[in-house]
Length: 396
Image 1 (cartoon, helix red, strand yellow):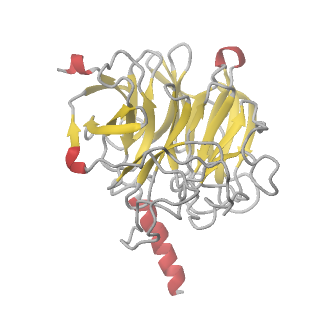
Image 2: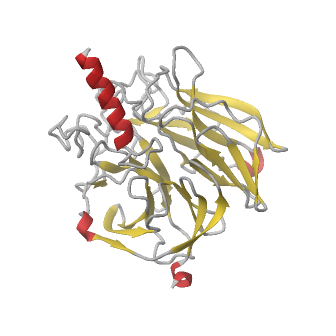
């Protein structure tokens, strides 16, 4: 009984501490021969070196609770997922609820998660979604990937492309972001589902992975674990904790993720084919009760992060800025902070983070950051809605 009580307390603390469950308190073995070690030791930039810059913002889509993901349609309108299960089409200043959205398992950090238009949307009309789903055997839910088309304010042609197993009643670490590599592949993430010591390092199980599929949901034959007995062949990299940020870096041609650490040790990782990022064997973090679960931050066969945060900022949402509207941000990264309620600007020199800067302080718990097709940066702030950052030269 004591062990059960301790386990329950540990799970409760982890949900509160990682800042991913809507609270306003603190944040929310297979050997792989082609694992690629990062060329530089990972760094963190101390909090005392974190600067601030003044930006203003305007609310574009008001009165949203937890707008988990967003993407833009070719006409400039916006699709927005509310974690509770609604899909919103924002067009001409009005919000419309899209009919036929998938049924979601809304528990803890699970719910309606990301949305992303296919890179060939203009010719195919496909839109991709991730969400927590209770479909399949067992109680609870797990992360699911679907594609569908939008016709007359309704989702049609719905196809489930991937459903993680097993279902679990745990409320932690569903992931999940979606992005594309420009070569006909879709990537998406699923967190370790709170099963830290089992899922991330076990290739026979879902969870703690970044997955790679063809746009039609089939498995690329050059995925690293195709043909391996009992391996999840959609897996592209593993040993992840809970990636809630994913970008395609156009300068390096790579998929990058950031992910929640435990207490301390949020990371930015450059995804590599077959790479093992080590969770929970290696980490810069500790348990939420202050105890240590590993004394290793790196090791043979593990790919290192290029950057990590101590203390944690609880990162959610990730953008690589290409817009000329923000010359001071161009070529750099923006990361949302759930814990500290700001957007963080990370200056880049290749794959090295050289400076940290807070912008949009106290905007609210930041859930997503997106550069729109109009060149402006849009931020989802919980309880507020979608805001647009005013370029700095106009804010002064």
